[in-house]
Image 1: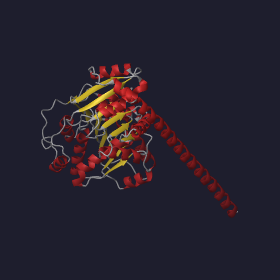
Image 2: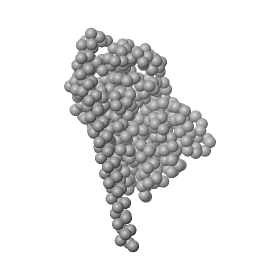
Image 3: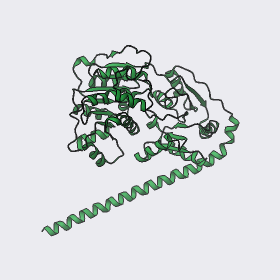
Image 4: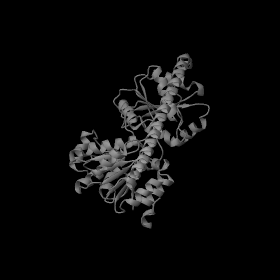
Length: 450
């Protein structure tokens, strides 16, 4: 990590004593105008992490927040930042670093909703979007920037006139995931160009060695607010597994979607290709399924997410790009179609359902190749999962229809791949013609000059 602060800050952070029962935001020290904003958003009582972190942050301390997914972390750092902004108005006041584009847009929405009555402006700086329009947005000097580390470093290095030398707050949200995604170099660069005299909030679901190293480099004498010390899933989540032969996975998926019809589903796949294939397969069988993965353009990703949030589609198929931070209130069932290779990702995936006190189901597909990974998950969460009740004969009756849908899905995937390749070839041809014309134009100019 970047050079640390003075040696004293490397010490173990203070542990804040356990808080009492939930109180109001006003009791936590939040100012009236922001309490009203919370009320309008339907935040009636603060969550555990908000009760722990907000009073400490309002005292001007650095905070390490350790909390399970869906615990209200955004409010825990947004409210203290907005309150400080009210007291000392300033442009380019706060920077929030997040691992994914979707999470960045969601955090921006919450900042704008909480700060709408006080005129807060935020800008999202992520990949997949035109850099010129982002440069213009940065030139307007918003109060809050929400960014993925890679694209922010691009602007710090290449956008004329943009710097963060006056920054007052730095937030690293989902810090463990930022570091797991190999953003360490970018985070180092950002830490070197922002003021040392700032407030820093580091939020993470897990305290890894990398996060501890980042804490020593970036925070001064922080207070640790931990509301969940061991890995756990929420109580109202009913978790199941099904043990099946790998070749019948698609048929079992269709059976479960039929059995639990009327619910909304998030289905997690391990690769972009399998996400796209399974979405096409389900559409061919008449399900309203929509994919979300890293190979889609940013507009398409946001479109998929918004259709699912608006309940225009009942099934969202996703890679782990959607497993953390995204708050979609109405997910009834999470299906781990491909078992996660990292056990901790299981916690984040199933955390998409049973949020904010509601109940939910999760079903994990375990094939003959996944037994060890599944045992690791059970060991991590400290419980044995029951098998989901099924009628095997009914599953087998679906195999013929599913095989036909698989064939169509493969054909469509091939067609999409061909279209993509021909588009790329056209782009390459246009580029080559453009280069040739430039060269020819250059030669003509030279002849004229002499």
